[in-house]
Length: 174
Ligand code: CO
Image (tube, rainbow, N blue to C red):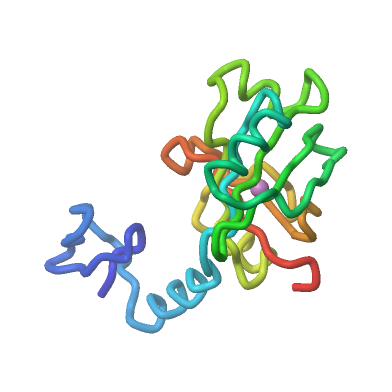
């Protein structure tokens, strides 16, 4: 039997991983169902970095990574301009605010430049959305929405992810 919270093994009514008393442990089938939902998390698709000056940051990252950005895109709905660098399968996405009320402008005001979010590639953003919601994690979007780079995206509340703004994304056709 397995813990319904952390999926650790349950012995004598207690989880051997998180230590909590488990009133309704999961059986093998229920565990497998949970794990197959989790397998929709494929790899780190991109890391979003908030910057103040996109031109200066682009030149610096081009030097650091030894590769120029391959794409620039404005996401009107988010008030951001983005610039993408490829690092293997993962991308680095530089984000600059296009208006003073953009979430990126507010982020930089509060915390300065730095890592803004981590995006996980999912087989299906819709599937990942329903799964994460079932876990009781708060979401910042009412449904997956269209983001930069031809993706369905949604964000998890950082307070429910140990302070990390996490995004799940999948290609628009999925
Ligand atoms: Co993103």
